[in-house]
Length: 550
Image 1: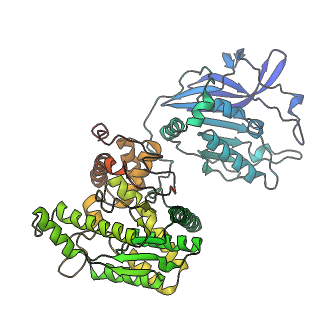
Image 2: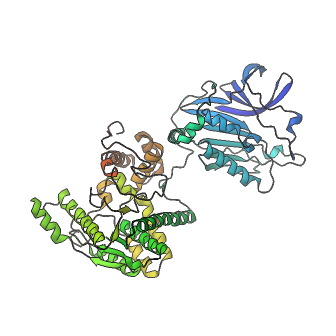
Image 3: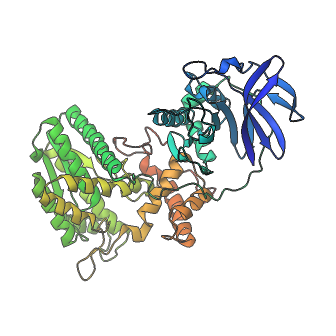
């Protein structure tokens, strides 16, 4: 263990309030408090001097020679420890900020901060904000209730935050000895720092020598870290509803601006009775209301093909009717058969040509109709489909503005469910049936009972797994090995190792070979921290090799 312990250290004519770092029976170093509180109930300057500007040698501390200063300790495995003490966190420019710029990604604070009404909430916000600003893990440990005396009561507050989120905290005023434990993800923090150019610019010129490595780099089993299986979806119901509201507002505002900018009458959307086109339609209705335009300026087009089922066809018509949009029905069967005849393809061969002929015919119909009616063609494809390349190039891959391109599949259904909860009873009932329908492009004929035969997740795997991989791969640069370890914990009891291995390999392979589709996608509103726009967050060579990752 590496232990950080508070103690007074005498040096020359001064006494310093210090944290000493102990590892394997040796005091590795001492960090002195920078800002000495001397107001209200605090009178520390009666005893303590502020940390000296330069390093000092304490010749005898528990019979050991110790360096006082630096405040940086190499923990191994890419982790660097920095230390500040109590009041340092409350300062306008905390010493921990300087330590972070010098490389510390784990900051510990030993504190004797007394309690009074509302202070705990403020202290917790300071810890969370400092961890966000410094892109670090921050551990705070306060004096225990047994140190209460005279006018002051202490609570033993313990808080661990990581990059702005409070990840663990202990019960205040406890008279029991309880550890507050959390596994910090150092790779994630270092990845975020590399990505954040502003952090890099601020750290230029900030350097300090570090104390020697304290611990051996052992693989962590993630025992004390919760891995959310659905990182795009807030688990709390109220937070999830607020997330849905905000995303809908971003999508609708972006679409309204584009319609207004190009000066078209309204928009055209292909409505399949599936989740993505449903969300696009709901967004378009909101956009029309923002612009003060009638909802009838939205032209919803159902385009029955060889794989269209009665369920999706009926839901598409019902939803458009209930929302009050203009309905068009254009069958693509004859046009597709003629095209297959033109190119010499036998329609009895249900291959990729058979499927993509339909997808591209639908897109051609929508583009030309939009031109004819002076409208904007709204794309419906989502973030998960772009990640997996589950779209037909120059088919559903293309539009004039794509409202869903930054929304992952696992979140789409919750946004539609949110709209179902606030809409009319009839709209809500239709939306709920759409939510219960299997995800499918419906490009292959239905089964003998008229039900969907082509189910997307049977082909490319569960979207909840792919969204999990996508989030951690793109957001934090996690390796395949790390993705697997996290997925095994997040989906324990849901998917076994063999299943996770299979779909993880599929995800990486499809993600890499599909970049050429993402390199030329239409404009779309960014709604979250993960975006695959080639003009913004994700710049990737279309022919990058996936071999090293697999």
